[in-house]
Length: 129
Image (cartoon, rainbow, N blue to C red; front, top):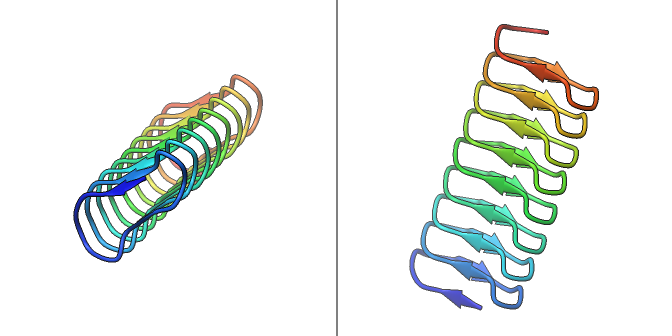
C-alpha cells in the first residue's frame, strides 16, 4: 500500500494507493484514489479518480469525479455529476444529478432525477424519467 501525496489519506488495503488529495481512503485490495476530498474505494480493484465524497464500493467499481456519487454494483461506473448512484452490476451514470441506474447493465447519460431500474434499461436525459 502507498500514499504518495496529499494530507490525511489512508491506503489500508493490500496493494492499495492514494496519490493525493485530503481525507481519502483506499481500503480494497488493489484499490486506488487519485485525488479529491473524502473519497472511498473500498472493494477489490475499485477506483475514484477525484471529486468530493465519492464512493466506489464493489469490485471493479469506479467514480471518475463529481460529488456525492456512489458506484455500488460490480463493475459499475459514474463519470461525474452530483448525487448519482450506479447500484447494480455493470450499471453506469455519465453525469447529471440525482440519477439512479439500478438495473443490471442499465445506463443514464444525463439529466435530473432519472431512474433506469430494469435490466438493460437506459435513459438518455431529461428529468424524472
